[in-house]
Amino acid sequence: MGKVCHSCGKGPAFGHNRSHSMVATKRRFNPNLQKVRVMVGSAPRRVYVCTRCLKAGKVTKAL
Image (tube, rainbow, N blue to C red; front, side, top):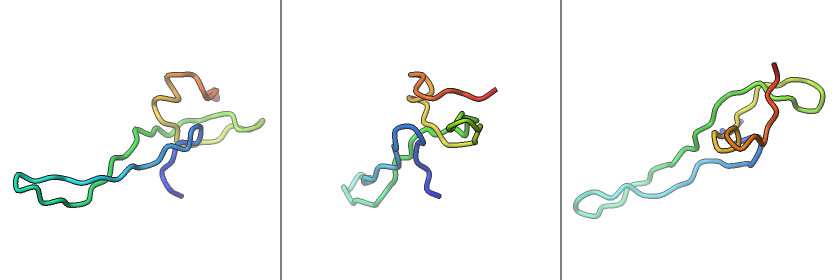
């Protein structure tokens, strides 16, 4: 399973590292994902959720 947010679907973004001589090498910007117990339907499940969705209250945590 890829590391994507369960709520919004945010995944890694891609770009380049630029050295002083402007040589481009590939790099990856990973989202800040946390593994959280979330109510999915009627059962709690451990899923990856980005911190933006956690802060906005887009998911209901299971206790």
